[in-house]
Length: 90
Image 1 (cartoon, rainbow, N blue to C red):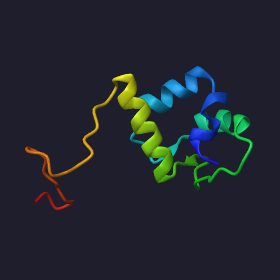
Image 2: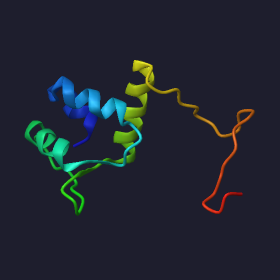
Image 3: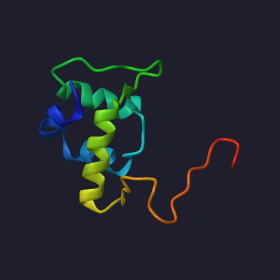
């Protein structure tokens, strides 16, 4: 089950945290425990007790964050001024 399916059941504090931390790949255990109570389906847990966010979950959160004005997402890397940096700094 994805975030989109349980979004309406989450309390506003959890929604706010998710939108303001939309770049996370997992939800920390202190938030995850509260989310699990609202999720009626399977959630993927990490080794630290957090919830792993799927690529679909992350896209959903990016869209929510962009709509809320907390981030501006560029959908392509080909826009002028955009540059990819690898882990070696090139």
